[in-house]
Image 1: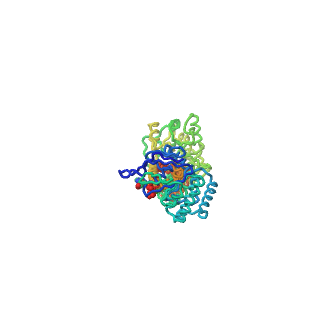
Image 2 (image 1 turned 90 degrees about the vertical axis):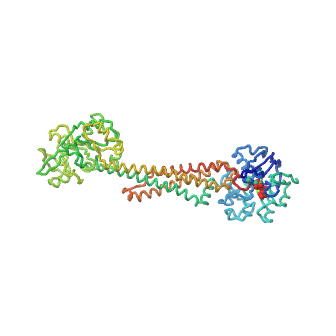
Image 3 (image 1 turned 90 degrees about the horizontal axis):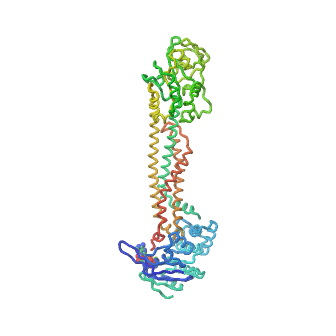
Length: 223
Length: 407
Ligand SMILES: Nc1ncnc2c1ncn2[C@@H]1O[C@H](COP(=O)(O)OP(=O)(O)OP(=O)(O)O)[C@@H](O)[C@H]1O
Ligand SMILES: [Mg+2]
């Protein structure tokens, strides 16, 4: 259901061109569990963002459920993201002036849910990640691991079929990291497609297959 | 959560940055409300002053010289009473009242005084109606300022005459005397007074004015005309004219209509007041321009900075599925709030300012003007919305990713 056809991405950087990704052809089925590994600067985040409909490729096409993401208007793409894609950012991207509860409410608010439903769903999601005692804390009043969990709860708010995560364990201690990976296993068991960028070999092992990136080229690993 | 939760929280999170642009619009509206408020009451005060003065245009014989406004009608020369009819039949705008007068010197018990013939309003009205046109058949509003609309009770005859030189009724054998005459001759209300071979009944003694009017005897115009054997002549017409019409050239028009007479205004009064008001009016225009420019630029500048500062957050919202309309509405709502609070706050402070300093600065009493509220709020909201519009649309055009700095 996720497919990249000849996707490349280059950045213009002070008169020179930096190629972040070249000719990527990737297919992921519904319910797939993919880890993306590779050295720093190899284009992992670039690929993931393009899969998530958040970064226009320089060339090639990205399909989700047979629909070409970048042939849509930006607003249609935003609506598509709202309904289908959950994204966990490397740096979480919580809104700093909103509480945990309100951060989780954002996707529900955008989906037009009423106030009561928003509160109810967001509270249950935060319970699921074990943060029901931190509902009205702002991100700055939470530990990094707790912020990560708020981000995970927010990803689930719109019940997405596809969950994309950029180094979800990068900033965590091994124990917490393991719990996060368990969480992604759960999500995959629920039938969601999970794509995860990681530097952690143990995390990569848990995935059904691994994509390796080297200097912007996809080298299909085992799987 | 609603859109306004989002906006509200953000405002309180970063209220310091907001403060300067809020201050610009707030103080701007304050200044303009204060000026508008003081100007309004100053114009009102002008109207009241003119009203107190009575007539502000005099029609005199061609050769007349005007030294003292109050004694200007004491001339030897005369002109036909028909001039009054000519004026009242004309289509000139801004004539609120006409009163023809004939003044002649007289002597009582060795004292020199002035006998002035005036035409009571009842007769004048009847005459004008009979002629089928004239000022009394015109719509009452006119310029409105001079009419005694605010007085619920009709002022007593004496005050009316002193103030506007208009009297409703006066019998052919009746006379009104100035306060000096009362003192000099020892006569009072109800007494008779022999003058130039006629006996008048004194129907009222006028309150003191401190002008030559105090040593006058007023009687019916047609009686005075008969006493002097001059026929239907007068030597002055006092006109109450609208300030605006006067500055719009009413005097020249009367001059054209009555080429054989001399038309003068109470220039000092009209000129200075009109000048003050014009000054205030142009001052408020200048302020309006400054406020629109400074307030607008300040808000636009703030909004641009705000968009830049929040691009990560905007990107997050868009990544989570917010379309451009959500982002635009978020910024416009913020602009609307800014404008609303600035407008209401500016009205309140401007009114306090005007009421407090109006009496000191302009020497007039100033009252709050609720009718300025929609005006102040509308202006403020308008500026804020226009200034927020472009930054908001810019924000909505951001690529969610370009905002993260992660890639
Ligand atoms: N905005 C940009 N302008 C220019 N070059 C960029 C930009 N963003 C990314 N790049 C370049 O694209 C390449 C791929 O970047 P990307 O962030 O995808 O790497 P990554 O594999 O995620 O690395 P890491 O593991 O460190 O997160 C890098 O060489 C980077 O320098
Ligand atoms: Mg990365």
